[in-house]
Length: 96
Length: 131
Length: 85
Image (tube, rainbow over all chains, first blue to last red; front, side, top):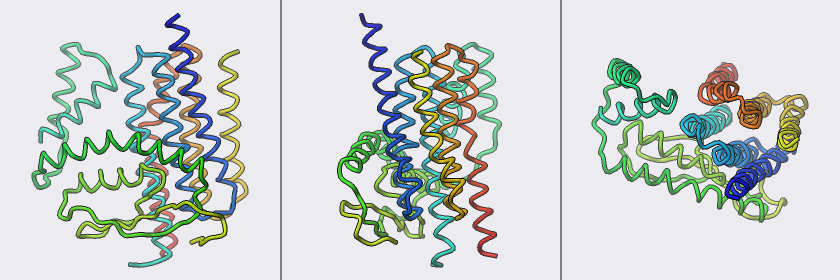
């Protein structure tokens, strides 16, 4: 019984993550500014991916150290990559 | 000094997940031997506050994500945001992380004296400004 | 069976940035699409490993996640320099 519940919770988190992936990525082919796409991609690629990994964590608690490391590195790398992309792409436009 | 050590050991144990004596020795030795940059001593209170903010920002980020999904946000604007000046590089990094992690705001540039150039989304229709 | 239900939508989501990278000529938009591809492929690796009960693949996924984006960051800086020159 508890196995069923944890399995369901895990799949629910994964489904939430995949939904966020689709929502955030669906803005990518539209004609919007780069920074707007960065906002939506941070929803999909950071928050959606974290939700998916939490779902995996519920399904497979024995591997928690590496999954926690995955969440940390995912959050830090993707956030800082967003900042670097925003900084580098706007640096050519205005010099301050 | 202690902060560096704790960070490195945490990463090491998360990566190896092995608490045998040999592994602990290797981890401590490597954490001590790796070069560290000599920055000005950081204030512990600032670090604790920053860590608490990191924990608190996660639910905020999900809230903002769902707000963006439910109500379309199409206004874009660039604002300047102010934080405490005279911070160490580590705390500046954390500030940039906190601003960029929430989906409605992205830090674009960090000026001296604690100013950040922030790109922000607002609620609204498609008809508005596109920068 | 279960694994297909999860993996196939993830693959479909992965196709969107591929399409964008193919279509858009602006180098920053391409770079944005590539960063999205990098994140999504690593996540697919991780999910596939857990669903197949093969944690060796999962370690690869975690390693990709923890070192993967450094190259894209360097590339962004290089493109910025080239644009300025």
